[in-house]
Amino acid sequence: MDAGSGTTGRGIVVAFDGSPGSEVALDWAAAAARRQAKQLTVLYCVDMAAVPLAPVYSPDDLPREIREVAQATLDRGVERAKTFAKPPGVEGAIVVGTTAAEVVLASKDADLVVIGSRGRGRLAAGILGSVSYAVAAHAFSPVVVVRGETVVHPDAGHPVVVGVDDSDASHRAVARAAEVAAAAGAQLRIVHVGRLRSPEGWAYVEDHAAGTAHSHAVREHATTILTRARDRVLATHPEVEIETEVLYGEPGHVLAPYGARAGLLVVGSRGRGGFAGLMLGSVSHTVIHEAGCPVMVVR
Image (tube, rainbow, N blue to C red; front, side, top):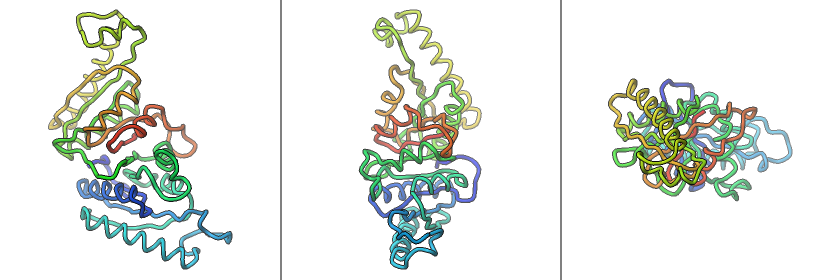
């Protein structure tokens, strides 16, 4: 796949709690690890709320009953990953704490973190789940949020779609998207969403010969951004088939519908990572919430 160049200690990390959403994320992560020939770490977090009041600092301190349930669930996840995709290496880890915090901590040593859109417990009541948003907002590595009940990957029939602007995070997102597309043999669609401030501009966005000075300027600026992004990709991945497109509107809402036919939707986030970083940007938040395919957030 898909996670990018370079290898760190844990390769790809996937959060697993035995729920259906985490199983889909596990399958996605296992297949990605196989294609990229990376280590897969299956992470099971024991919620502090489930632990008695006695101090618990490590899995070894857990009561036997809780530890056995955690180990059995983790073993099932590790075996599922091995059977489903046969990645080059799979290991399991049990941690104690809040899932979001522990996954963010694990992301410091990972090439990629994968998490499902729902999980068990008190935080599962959200539309997507507070854990998914928190990890996407604060992780140090790229994050893939996997939604739905089936696994979809980039391939010849499912392009990688990436939104691009002038930001450094956007440039990094394009680079990651290109790596994914190259490894998967998928088309890369680079999209820029322009903002038009006048009704007259909206009336002519599909007509290159008409429109206002503002609409022409927006299109020309978008074309420049797309051409530069395309050239950067071709310099490192000349084999990738690339299409570019200029769209108009609010970026998150415009990009999200591509999830209906994409294998992966990639967006940049301008936060610094870690809990001291900024919250998830509005575009990333909207795309994660609305897109029907896995979404990669890159900062």
